[in-house]
Length: 175
Image 1 (spheres, helix red, strand yellow):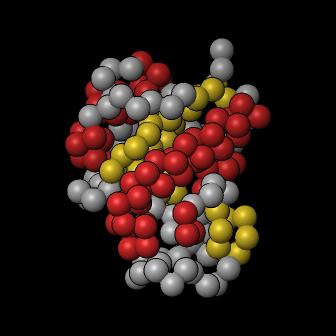
Image 2: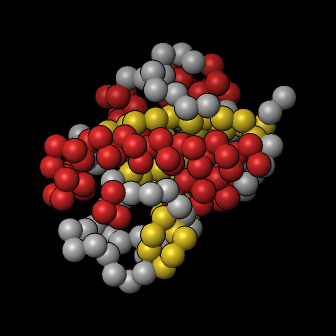
Image 3: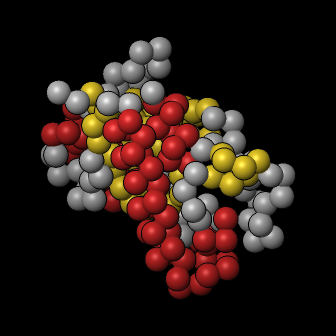
């Protein structure tokens, strides 16, 4: 189920070996993703704070769309720390996993200048909608959380200063 939700968020829908000219030196995911992105520059990353998932050890993982895989970035269950950073909203602690959508504005700024931030936020909404729809189809519940301390979330995930957390989406079974 987690693999399907992550694919809906940022999975590859059309393979391509040709990144846009302004892609830079970062790793091309291998094609176009499920959510639209201005100039196909994909300024977003999706992280997963795993707490209670069968056959997946607790920790923080970065989703790799081109490989449909997870890369572990941090050991241990971080849901309690995210709960604290998200102003103690209980569903952040209670979800089996917590997705965090982050953005690097500079990835789009080379082409779009000051509008890069706006486009990144629009893309965050599209990714969030895809997560909502896929979660619902799987009988899972989620909610988009925007109230959190950016610096604390960056610290919990080990993000660089230029990678900004934009949304938190805990996911769990509906009751």
